[in-house]
Image 1 (cartoon, rainbow, N blue to C red):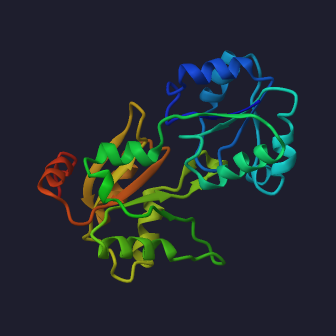
Image 2 (image 1 turned 30 degrees about the vertical axis):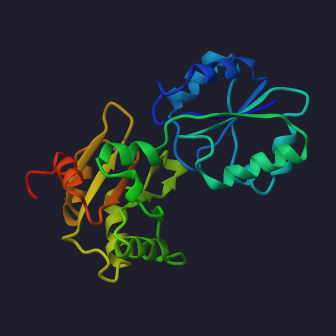
Length: 254
């Protein structure tokens, strides 16, 4: 049996079903290339299960997927994922591979940034378009496709959830001080420093922080908090109810 277990957004998000499956597992793997998992959370899982979780890389779930999944043959193996187990589309490869090898699989769902951030924002989930991700830019890697997503959504009157790329070696997403300039430099006036956005940090944790502010103010706001993960929402046309909900997060300087 192969268990695909979502870990949610915080250390207390494990479901009762997840705890039961962890105790049954003979081997536990985890990935954090889609989001980070704190060492405390890994320690908690080890304590619950009595087994030390093994970190795997993206290649193990993509390039070497056959070998990774085959380890579940004749035993119970769990693979742990930040957020919900199936939100990252690459994780569907695991389902397909398990089916091809005749391995039974069970999904244990958990909270995801996709639903938590949208819910906390006060915006209508049905008015969101495709999600965009701001990457870490380098001299050799300067994509701008994320701006095309935002532009199209705005043109369609849809809100955009904008994720910040994860830096696994640092255990966190890139910061707003890096993401905002990347967005503005690639924006072609789709968004400007004056564009209002919802900045959301460490959603789902007790230290979560939400601010509705101009893009030029958000980097400064983020420096005042010990942020591990963050994202933005670029609102489009808001209803009266949405505006009222969003204004609850307004900063004093806007």
